[in-house]
Length: 233
Picture 1 (cartoon, rainbow, N blue to C red):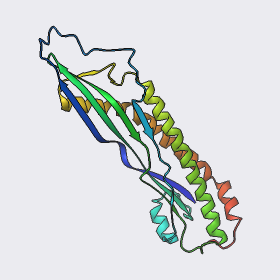
Picture 2: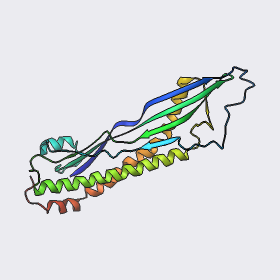
Picture 3: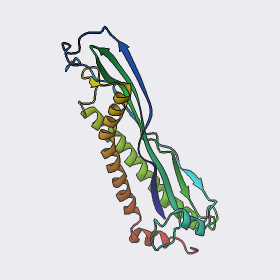
Picture 4: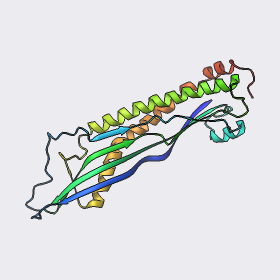
């Protein structure tokens, strides 16, 4: 039995960035003040993080040999008797607003949406074990524990991402806009700022999840599970 989380995106994906620029009166850029700042601006509602708990799809279509291939060597020298496979991803969508005045483009986030919902969660039980048999139930119980650990870690990660984004007061909002050369430069720099906050938190989540799942796959637990049944293949 083994949990095998893998991550399809390899990083953070920008689903969409909507940039709205309102043209203001032109002036002499040398005499205009920098983008105006309002330290007291209310940032509540700026950050929205979701991480839906996608239910696992139970699969009994693979043989033990096929499961060994599916596990991609994650069980080392042992035999994969069960597998929990998570295809994780993180994406973000932003609503960006801005003004242009005096030759300056001032931009800011009106909304930042981050989604950590996994693309898929699958539990594999080898087809050699009859449904409802001792071995089938033992494998399924073990893999459900892997699913539970993933759910808990994902919920914690969503909170950590939200805390990190809320704490990054330097992220441009209407109260502290960013000066950019043009629309393309603005989108690129704003996306980079989101990645700067979210990437280390998400990488930490993946490492913590791997460690927590490894705890369930210690030899002592395998031995306890194996002793419950006698018709292992």
